[in-house]
Image 1 (tube, rainbow, N blue to C red):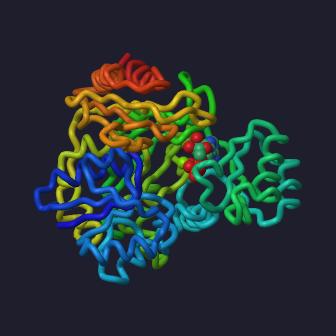
Image 2: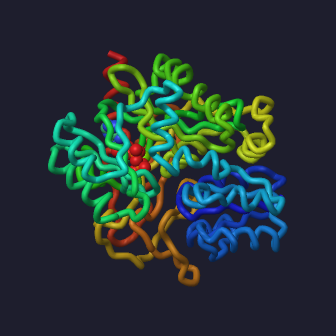
Length: 425
Ligand SMILES: Nc1ncnc2c1ncn2[C@@H]1O[C@H](COP(=O)(O)OP(=O)(O)O)[C@@H](O)[C@H]1O
Ligand SMILES: [Mg+2]
């Protein structure tokens, strides 16, 4: 089989490495991929949002199956366009991808289907939003409706911050048309858990739960980032929480999407907050999370391609989906200064024995040399019998990988381990 993966970060690298384990895979293309992914797939310089070029490439190269891994092309309808020329895909069509593409859609969807989430109001008029903030409960959260490169959700600790957020999003149009509508929602508290799930529109199978570390620096200080490290399984997702999440959130979401004529096929990501009243939805994503995938897929024992094909063909209930009992930790090695200003172009050295543990996000090839080219450069994953072992192993591996200006958090998994220790006492 010839497979095409659309995207080019650590997530795509993890997907590609897992797909390659299936012996019927003869070729994997990655559009556009990156210098690190080039070791495991043929990277093709086509942007992940150039849908016509992606479709032509798939036709010209007789691609048998496409994995659209990134949010933007999914929301734009890449799957619909590929299906139209006969290329089956892993991933939701445009109608279903709206669950991530529009925060207003997803909030209204949850409200009408009684799925627990933060209370909220929608505004299309900045003046009305500002007026509402005069008496709103603070802290509050202001979110742009549409895609905003992961920067469209602003947690505001004061009224002034919230007003500023409204100005930036609705009046200065910081995120363009994505800010034509906003959601202002209740501030929730509790640990966050990402539950990625496979679904064929009917059956839904949650993967091992994980927890990301979004802030740039240790102890959850510094700016928000695309993610600085992940651990799985997330200890906050206890059997009790799982039961509640399945009954109140996961099963009802898949059922309601189907009932509303938007059956979701692919990976549906539940971003949950474990509040004192139980799990609530922070957001849905219509694809694998990055960097959650870099801990979830290494723990998957079953064949990824077979599962993906089953989500497309609608027979997920007949396919085994099993995860290892162990744990995994992924530490992101970034360019110092990220997510603000940073230097790049430095050579990356990865010992041969560690290449299988590394998922490259921001690097390019210069001849045979791999050079840093982004803020988040690569993820280093280790699996272990438990979280303690996985975390220790991941950090040992990080010490053996080097590039000038490398920066990584030293406390990935620390809070999760402390939580586990408290539970055991
Ligand atoms: N209602 C809320 N209460 C508390 N924190 C929130 C709330 N909504 C979002 N957040 C925080 O902001 C982050 C980003 O919000 P999210 O809705 O996931 O937007 P994005 O599309 O940027 O990922 C979340 O991971 C969470 O930490
Ligand atoms: Mg999010």
